[in-house]
Image (cartoon, rainbow, N blue to C red):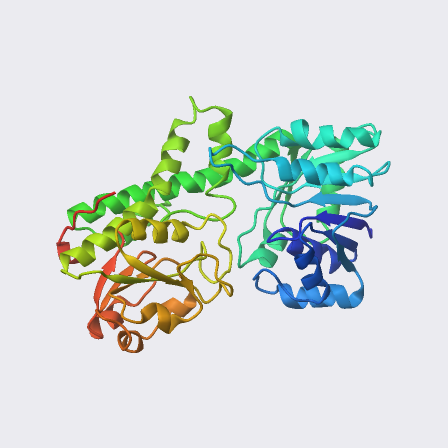
Length: 432
């Protein structure tokens, strides 16, 4: 059944969601407080990078099923998909959620459905969203229905996973959950799992906390492997042949809008009980300093004076332009504290976001003592070592993502180092 839908927030989740509904028979109005975002979408110009988004956006606007502005409109359904970041003290900042809820209150009518998609701490629907909807004068649960259905997609595969992934539907009552499930069946082929709103909120942060703790385990194992002459990537690969083992991969830190943020929501709920979660967060947050220390130690051991580092990758994962909570930014800052001169390059980040960034690969490589791979972009996997060497002062590459062809780089005369693998059993002391 065709619905009118107002989607508040047109970022990495809100825009693909709006486009999907617009492509599946609904009339959608997208809202964003950023006027530049609204203007670019109207011109069918993307402000985010996502596979398949451009053609789907073009189709929606050309068909007239998607409009955008900075103000909400009346609709049958309101979807809130705005950021829920953490503050400097690692507690949740829910003011954007609160503002979005308050903004739609004058537009909701009897029989409407409000869905919160943003990942949030448990009880956000009850303690933040609903209080902002009460001034509408509608009775919550009988005249105005509310639910939480958290996004569960990964950047780079958003459209595939919007369709195929199971959906958690957390209604404030059974009717709210039923209405929400019915709406998402417009395009979701995965199963709908209905529960209450607070449980749905907890489920989403649990999912990302599991991954964060698992990555922290991998990062600890990587540091230990470095001290005993073991390649942790090979060890993890072999361990994962066990039918009940699935160790994740180590790296220079954890980034993104979910894994690096959501565990703090649980720590905030009960710091005394969330000890494993807290330790995992601290472990992963320490990896940028560890990576910078590893780089500095390698270059000092080679006797290189005033080394320049070409830091390759600022996005938090490969083949996307998303820098939210990216550990690469912290790695660059930590390298500078280790007296390294750093120039950062990322082919997916088209405008400089940090002082050390350049838009030109050759500028980053020019007179560099080492390349440090921080993001597994395809461009870095395919980088020609011979061409890179033409610009560099020394042939050193440090791979924190296990993404390059080591034999190829060694054949070109490079000393190749891998995070979690002390080269040829030669254990290097890393200051963390």
